[in-house]
Length: 146
Length: 387
Ligand SMILES: [Zn+2]
Image (tube, rainbow over all chains, first blue to last red; front, side):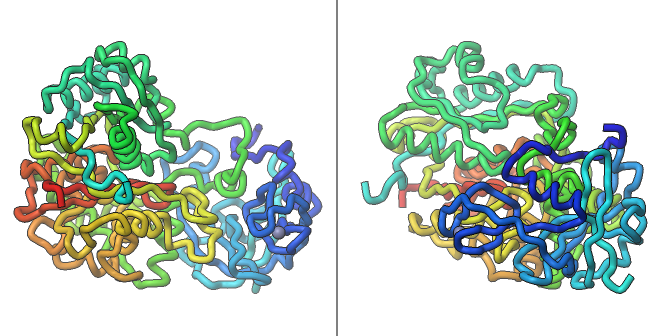
């Protein structure tokens, strides 16, 4: 891990499809293949019908900022270097009850702190972009107007 | 048995070590000291202890503690999970063991040294993040404070709560600590101006919204209500106790449910009050888990002291300080006495029932004690007389 950023495991059958989708620049949400209900974060069984049949379906990649924080040190060194940065929770356009954690950045490959965190407004529209760190592609978010 | 454990057991002994940073004792030594002082407090012999309960966070094993302190043959032992959510759960497990005859004398405890690597899980860099953390920590939402700050920001947005409300919480705890010679912050006051100028940790939370980092240990001894009457102190009867993992709950990063701001406190409260003759409006003092100041505001709502969204204004006008409508965290608690994953809230609840708190609420005949909000949690309702 050259960058020092935290990276996900890539050998968990319950979560790997998300990261494989991101590598193809697709934002996928786990759905139950039996009853169709979406679930975030992923898990092996549907809590509504107990089916273990899963469908990973692409979503629009559009949403709004549900909440955000601005972390300051002490932080792990890789993150500390960019502090203060932002972490946001995005409510997806298809279903505002589906929320995904990410970062709001100026552009796909911009630094973690490329947006003035104090300019973030709850409810503002964002859209997904993708950025590679080591062997993982992460979804990130840019302002929908930008 | 329809009343379950109601009034059938009591906390009769409490003990603690000094609180501080860099204490010379080992984590095991601290545990032994606290348990030993709890035994001395109630005059029960170590060899009579036949039950042990602690946190899954606890690194001291039952066998190491038992053979150091000279406990008897242990017939019941368990650990309760989810960090600061475990505290009151240890008392519930002890009460159930005693009420069902699985054990006669149970010790519950928590010992912690800040320097121990296991005490700050967020600071350990695993090779790769698994579980739900792979969808949060990898984006720099690293620490518990970041996770709670996310919910706090949303709470402030939905209900109009302000930093002044958070400051009310921090200042109330500090005022109580300033009356408690055992508190880490006994001699350090906190003004609103100092709060507002405190450095950011994770906006919207500043330094003073966070609990302390503490070395120390505490312990409590639980026996039957019958035996409690023969012991030196006024018993703190365990009138009601509950644990809760609400449906669909995700610990700490509860961003995914239909109503993320309605945390485990609500369902824990439902279970607690359902078995209690005491109601929220009867409670005159409370010890509410305070790893972070917003948890107090959420807990005031969750446990029924005010309506949704009114937790912020509830803290105004000294309402949660000694002399107010509901004094909260009368020892200074995690934010100003010591942060030992909430076990000091339990011992302070016992002191309130004995009438020996340094911020004693004069007519308090019951005390609510809660554990972590935002994680699978627990709560107990203590009384100083059988209802
Ligand atoms: Zn299903």
